[in-house]
Image: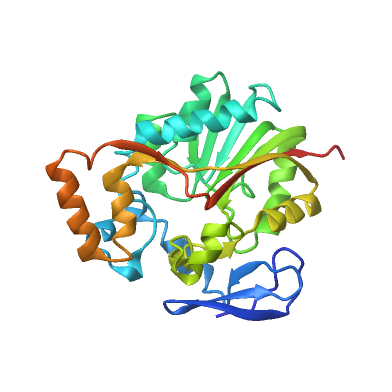
Amino acid sequence: MNEVECTICRGRGYAHAYDVGRFTIVRCTNCRHLYVWPRPPMDEVQAIYRGSYFANPAFETTDDGAYYGYRDQAEDRPNVERRMDEILARAERYVAPGSLLDVGCGLGFMVGAAARRGWDAHGLDLNADAVAWATEHVSKQITVGTLAALDAPDGSFDCITLLDLIEHVADPRQELGPVARALRPGGVLVIVTPDAGSMVSRAFGSHWLEMKRAPEHLHFFSRHGLTRMLDTAGFDVVDMHSIGKITSVRTLLSDLKFYSRPFFTGVERVLDRVKLADRIVDVDPHTKVCLYARRRAD
């Protein structure tokens, strides 16, 4: 375990906030940012994203120690792509379709949605299995790697998306350096991340599902904290909104089973009998934020 400074303000003062399983969430005493401390070694954290991350059998067994990733994201593809299309439509208010990079692209659904809207879309991800699947089923412009190691000239992209990514990295503020270099001045950065400052998130505390994902999630941002960090990195926030999930009722229940497997398994059986378990719903509990920021000119 390693001591880490606050990624927002670089302060080292903190106070205990929550216990989540064997992990502790602390709150910076200066800027109020929430993060996991002590920090697990990043090679252990990154091991979570390999193999079955995008089709995790723990959603059937509700093994609390393996609550990460997705029940079956490939199965959810049409619903995810619909949400990606909505994000892109909002981003296009601030930047015309050009070159786009989705960092942490997973199975590539943002890349596919962007390409259909006329973007020259590329993706990066650490999960080699996911990249192989995405290359076969979505786009040939998806590679294994990180933005810091990407061999591309500065200012190569008009839009960069970090969707459900910034909360996973060791130092989000440092991660924004390569983003700023790769994005042209005036280009737009889109971030989706859990909103730790929302009323629902604060009410649930350590029982909030996003927090139960520690150490997959290492940071828990408020809108204020995220805006402050982006300002430090040379970005001006131009828009933000809460963002929910388009998915089946069955997939929603697979998350809720981590609260009570017997109860929500029973609910699923009832809904199966009345043929509602596979109904597609759009649910927004206001626990995630989608933020759009423009890179300032040098």
